[in-house]
Image 1 (cartoon, one colour):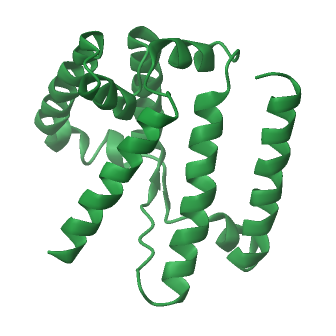
Image 2: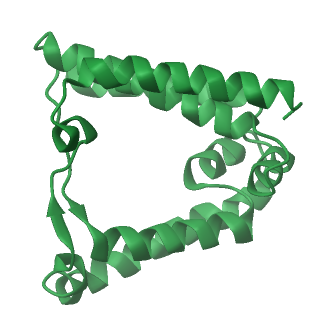
Length: 175
């Protein structure tokens, strides 16, 4: 039960930050897709850096367990293409489309309907794809520290420094 409460609280906090960061707006989404407004990229990169640090810290403290999903190219490549095409057509990614509906932007409702239809189609097609497409290119559970054979605490500061450098470059360019 505590996990559900933690999930609810962090979900509400993330939604609040999405709204306050104005990344739910269509013009921000379009700007990101056209590489003219990096607000969403900065928001997502911030979330990745904080999440990466927090997950590894909690894992090392024994508070949480790191559960890496297997990299399966047969699922990742078509899924990524569908995600990108949907984002480009609608102008919202799945998370921001739900947030935009919460703000009262009814145009994003098409994305929510599309997600529900897509989930239903996936559930119906899953038995047929399980041993074919979704079994192709199974690379196992990969992490960059494991691939490089180094401690994750060696890479995390490098990624944070790289993120800060990228943020600075975006600000310098007015993006």
